Image (cartoon, rainbow, N blue to C red; front, top):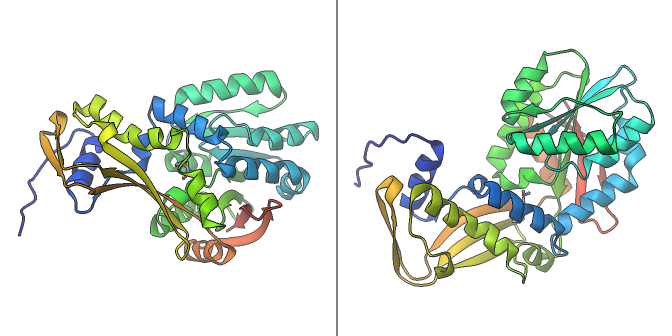
Amino acid sequence: MKKTPNLHFDSPFKEDVYKGLSAFPKYLLSKYIYDEKGDKLFQQIMEMPEYYLTNCELGILQTHTAAISDSFNAEAGFDLIELGAGDGKKTKIILKYLSDKNYDFNYLPVDISQSVLVELEASLKKELPKVKVQPQQGTYFKTLEKLSDYNRRKKVILFLGSNIGNLLHEKAIDFLRNIREAMNPEDMLFMGFDQKKHPQKILDAYNDPAGITEAFNKNLLVRINRELDADFDPDQFLHWETYDPESGTAKSFLVSKKPQKVFIKGLDLKVSFKAWESIHTEISQKYDDSVVKWLADEAGLEVETSFKDNENCYKNYIFRK
Ligand code: AVI
């Protein structure tokens, strides 16, 4: 049996890259795509015509603004906590409605990136000056834990963009359980889930002809080159997308176009690729009502209601504890 060396890593990134590229089959974790360049590429993805998710969710929020906001049902005042707020483009629709109606609420965007929060706060000051913004820099769960008894106001937690789809079901259930832990009985969770649909539409969203998604996927290699002093040639890898309509799982891969060796100096690791060997990089899960209900059941949450777009592409669900 092959012995695993007893290695010590001084960062989770190093450890995860080492483990993923030493495994069979090889993999890398999609969370590492998001450095400064990865964030910019994702912004570009969200503006691509093929990436329907953003417009579908925007459409739902625009069509059902009143029904969604009024369902927060919080005369006594509430905290609107958004996990991974980004540029807040979609949330601003809800914020504007709540602010125009003089609802008593604070908006607490949570993000790991301080610069994202600074930009968001500045744009809100200009566009919606009445909204009370309290940015929270940190990881989702540490922040939720901190907020769970920081005051007893009702919490409405937002998690948009079908970001949950980047987690395998088991991890998605853990994620929902963690949110549930931070909820009081009157609190609500509002989340976006991309739905199963024509497989071609999904493949097109993750394989655009301009190559933006390819650059996004290959940013993993670019980042390993820069941060771990490696010599990946991204041109020698193919961006490859698959979609399994049975499981609803879209998977991204990088496929080696030839036999090649890569040296990662920062890990003192030589990685050999056979021709057409793959690195699995991301999953983007697609859902239907029964799968969402199953995830909620497993996590101890209840689906209260849902909102969909005209083409049944995407749904936002409200959950309660
Ligand atoms: C952030 N996440 C929901 C995106 C998705 O659709 O899985 C990331 C992405 N990957 C390729 N394109 C967009």
